[in-house]
Length: 187
Image (cartoon, rainbow, N blue to C red; front, side, top):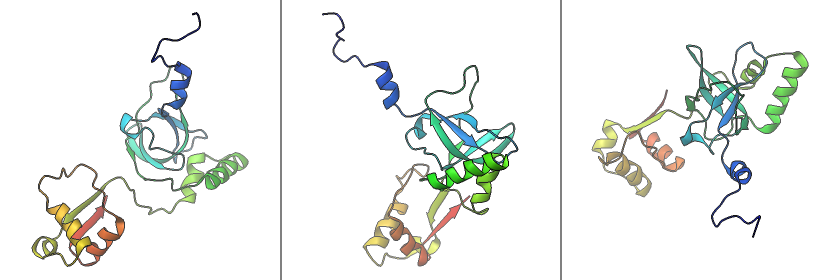
Protein backbone atom coordinates (compact mmCIF):
# COMPACT_ATOMS: atom_id res chain seq x y z
CA UNK A 1 0.00 0.00 0.00
CA UNK A 2 1.15 3.53 -0.63
CA UNK A 3 1.87 5.74 2.35
CA UNK A 4 3.04 2.89 4.59
CA UNK A 5 6.53 2.93 6.04
CA UNK A 6 8.76 -0.10 6.20
CA UNK A 7 9.10 -1.71 9.63
CA UNK A 8 11.64 0.19 11.77
CA UNK A 9 11.53 3.40 9.73
CA UNK A 10 11.56 6.55 11.88
CA UNK A 11 10.07 9.88 10.87
CA UNK A 12 13.00 12.34 10.81
CA UNK A 13 10.98 15.15 12.43
CA UNK A 14 10.02 12.89 15.34
CA UNK A 15 13.60 11.65 15.75
CA UNK A 16 14.93 15.22 15.80
CA UNK A 17 12.40 16.36 18.41
CA UNK A 18 13.26 13.41 20.65
CA UNK A 19 17.04 13.81 20.29
CA UNK A 20 18.85 15.91 22.86
CA UNK A 21 19.73 19.46 21.76
CA UNK A 22 23.20 19.84 20.27
CA UNK A 23 23.64 23.63 20.50
CA UNK A 24 23.53 25.93 23.52
CA UNK A 25 23.25 29.70 23.72
CA UNK A 26 25.68 30.92 26.39
CA UNK A 27 25.65 34.33 28.05
CA UNK A 28 29.21 35.35 28.87
CA UNK A 29 30.35 38.37 30.91
CA UNK A 30 31.54 40.46 27.98
CA UNK A 31 30.02 43.67 26.56
CA UNK A 32 27.79 42.07 23.90
CA UNK A 33 24.00 41.96 24.13
CA UNK A 34 23.31 38.51 22.67
CA UNK A 35 24.26 34.99 23.64
CA UNK A 36 26.99 33.07 21.84
CA UNK A 37 26.24 29.66 20.32
CA UNK A 38 28.37 26.64 21.20
CA UNK A 39 28.15 22.98 20.25
CA UNK A 40 27.34 20.58 23.10
CA UNK A 41 29.79 17.63 23.22
CA UNK A 42 28.20 14.18 22.86
CA UNK A 43 28.95 13.21 26.49
CA UNK A 44 27.08 16.28 27.80
CA UNK A 45 23.97 16.07 25.61
CA UNK A 46 20.89 15.57 27.72
CA UNK A 47 22.73 16.77 30.88
CA UNK A 48 22.84 20.50 30.10
CA UNK A 49 19.94 22.76 31.11
CA UNK A 50 19.33 26.52 31.12
CA UNK A 51 20.82 28.12 34.24
CA UNK A 52 23.90 25.88 34.45
CA UNK A 53 27.37 27.38 34.22
CA UNK A 54 29.74 26.28 31.45
CA UNK A 55 33.35 27.08 30.61
CA UNK A 56 33.80 28.35 27.05
CA UNK A 57 36.49 29.89 24.89
CA UNK A 58 36.24 33.37 23.44
CA UNK A 59 39.31 34.02 21.34
CA UNK A 60 42.21 32.91 23.53
CA UNK A 61 40.34 33.50 26.80
CA UNK A 62 38.43 30.86 28.75
CA UNK A 63 35.37 32.32 30.49
CA UNK A 64 32.53 31.02 32.63
CA UNK A 65 29.12 31.66 31.13
CA UNK A 66 25.53 30.63 31.82
CA UNK A 67 23.54 28.40 29.46
CA UNK A 68 20.35 30.21 28.45
CA UNK A 69 18.75 28.32 25.60
CA UNK A 70 19.15 24.93 23.96
CA UNK A 71 18.62 24.23 20.25
CA UNK A 72 19.00 21.43 17.75
CA UNK A 73 20.78 23.59 15.16
CA UNK A 74 23.14 26.53 15.30
CA UNK A 75 23.25 29.57 13.04
CA UNK A 76 23.73 28.74 9.35
CA UNK A 77 27.19 29.16 7.89
CA UNK A 78 28.89 29.38 11.29
CA UNK A 79 31.42 26.89 12.63
CA UNK A 80 30.71 26.37 16.33
CA UNK A 81 33.22 25.62 19.07
CA UNK A 82 32.37 23.06 21.73
CA UNK A 83 31.87 24.08 25.33
CA UNK A 84 34.95 23.15 27.36
CA UNK A 85 33.26 21.99 30.56
CA UNK A 86 29.98 21.78 32.42
CA UNK A 87 30.54 23.29 35.87
CA UNK A 88 27.28 22.46 37.68
CA UNK A 89 25.21 19.31 38.14
CA UNK A 90 22.01 21.32 38.25
CA UNK A 91 21.09 24.89 37.31
CA UNK A 92 22.45 27.51 39.71
CA UNK A 93 19.86 29.98 38.40
CA UNK A 94 16.21 29.00 38.20
CA UNK A 95 13.84 30.01 35.42
CA UNK A 96 12.52 32.90 37.55
CA UNK A 97 15.99 34.43 37.92
CA UNK A 98 16.77 33.88 34.25
CA UNK A 99 13.57 35.76 33.36
CA UNK A 100 14.54 38.56 35.74
CA UNK A 101 17.98 38.76 34.09
CA UNK A 102 16.41 38.89 30.62
CA UNK A 103 14.04 41.66 31.71
CA UNK A 104 16.86 43.64 33.33
CA UNK A 105 19.10 43.28 30.28
CA UNK A 106 16.30 44.42 27.95
CA UNK A 107 15.10 47.28 30.14
CA UNK A 108 18.54 48.74 30.86
CA UNK A 109 20.08 47.76 27.50
CA UNK A 110 22.75 45.83 29.37
CA UNK A 111 24.67 42.74 28.21
CA UNK A 112 22.87 39.62 29.48
CA UNK A 113 26.17 37.99 30.55
CA UNK A 114 27.02 40.99 32.74
CA UNK A 115 23.55 40.93 34.30
CA UNK A 116 23.83 37.21 35.06
CA UNK A 117 27.28 37.72 36.60
CA UNK A 118 25.75 40.14 39.13
CA UNK A 119 23.18 37.49 40.16
CA UNK A 120 25.84 34.95 41.16
CA UNK A 121 28.29 35.05 44.08
CA UNK A 122 31.79 35.87 42.84
CA UNK A 123 33.35 32.91 44.67
CA UNK A 124 30.83 30.24 43.60
CA UNK A 125 33.02 27.14 43.12
CA UNK A 126 32.73 24.99 40.00
CA UNK A 127 31.34 21.49 40.35
CA UNK A 128 33.17 19.96 37.46
CA UNK A 129 36.71 19.43 38.68
CA UNK A 130 36.92 17.81 42.08
CA UNK A 131 39.53 15.41 43.39
CA UNK A 132 39.14 13.22 46.45
CA UNK A 133 41.94 11.16 47.98
CA UNK A 134 42.93 9.51 51.24
CA UNK A 135 45.05 11.46 53.68
CA UNK A 136 47.83 9.69 55.56
CA UNK A 137 45.45 9.27 58.50
CA UNK A 138 42.85 7.66 56.23
CA UNK A 139 45.35 5.27 54.67
CA UNK A 140 46.70 4.09 58.03
CA UNK A 141 43.63 3.95 60.28
CA UNK A 142 40.97 1.30 60.33
CA UNK A 143 37.38 2.37 59.53
CA UNK A 144 35.07 3.06 62.50
CA UNK A 145 31.77 2.32 60.76
CA UNK A 146 30.05 1.08 57.64
CA UNK A 147 29.87 4.51 55.98
CA UNK A 148 33.54 5.20 56.65
CA UNK A 149 34.51 1.71 55.47
CA UNK A 150 32.63 2.19 52.17
CA UNK A 151 34.34 5.49 51.34
CA UNK A 152 37.83 4.54 52.51
CA UNK A 153 37.57 1.09 50.89
CA UNK A 154 36.61 2.57 47.54
CA UNK A 155 39.49 5.06 47.67
CA UNK A 156 41.97 2.31 48.60
CA UNK A 157 40.90 0.17 45.60
CA UNK A 158 43.81 0.21 43.11
CA UNK A 159 41.50 -0.69 40.21
CA UNK A 160 39.42 2.50 40.41
CA UNK A 161 40.11 4.78 37.48
CA UNK A 162 41.00 8.12 39.07
CA UNK A 163 39.64 10.02 36.08
CA UNK A 164 36.24 8.28 36.15
CA UNK A 165 33.35 9.77 38.13
CA UNK A 166 33.03 8.26 41.59
CA UNK A 167 29.67 8.68 43.27
CA UNK A 168 29.30 8.32 47.02
CA UNK A 169 26.40 9.82 48.98
CA UNK A 170 27.39 13.27 50.22
CA UNK A 171 26.71 12.47 53.87
CA UNK A 172 29.25 9.62 53.76
CA UNK A 173 31.97 11.82 52.27
CA UNK A 174 31.16 14.56 54.78
CA UNK A 175 31.45 12.20 57.76
CA UNK A 176 34.80 10.83 56.62
CA UNK A 177 36.07 14.29 55.67
CA UNK A 178 35.28 15.71 59.11
CA UNK A 179 37.39 13.00 60.68
CA UNK A 180 40.38 14.02 58.51
CA UNK A 181 40.60 10.76 56.61
CA UNK A 182 40.06 12.19 53.13
CA UNK A 183 40.76 15.47 51.43
CA UNK A 184 38.49 17.17 48.90
CA UNK A 185 39.71 19.98 46.69
CA UNK A 186 37.96 22.00 44.00
CA UNK A 187 40.02 23.76 41.36
